[in-house]
Amino acid sequence: DRLDSTGDGKIDAEELFSLFKWLNHKTSKFEVEDIIWEVDDDGDKCINWLEFQAMYRRCRNDSSGFEPRRLFNVVEFLMTDKDANGTVSVEEVAQILYLRSGKGLLDSQFEEIFGTTDTISAPELNFTEYLRSLELSRKKERATCLSR
Image 1 (tube, rainbow, N blue to C red):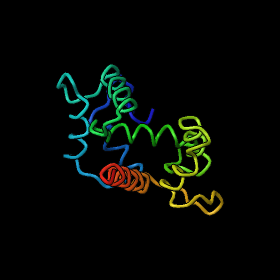
Image 2: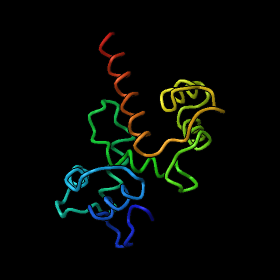
Image 3: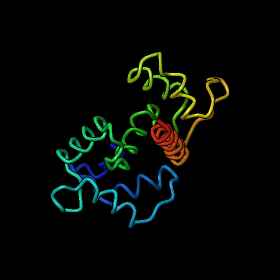
Image 4: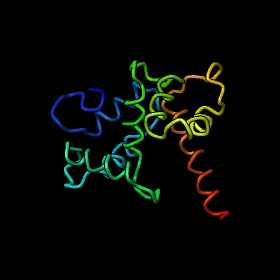
């Protein structure tokens, strides 16, 4: 398992930092510790299975956009990266989006992530690019909400 690389049933800062290095995502130890802190309900500086499940459920059901999502974004990326090569392809993203949103919203969400609806020329995204596309998508959502 990429997140719990030691197999002890917990995710600690060292494991998460190693994952970011594997993904070529530049981050600081402080930021990684902060990501752990957002989810660590019992304060042991690790994320156990119950905390992980609670985080995932909260983020999946969050309609306000205020739930801390940094670990959730890592998990979503890893789940989407079916071939475990550190990037997400058009096919991998399309499959997840279709299962979550159906065909109706597929094109618009696809364009938000890849910047195009052209599935042939769409690039593969590394983790940093994936995060950037999520942030742009959230900014568009906020702007739309504010203009209403």
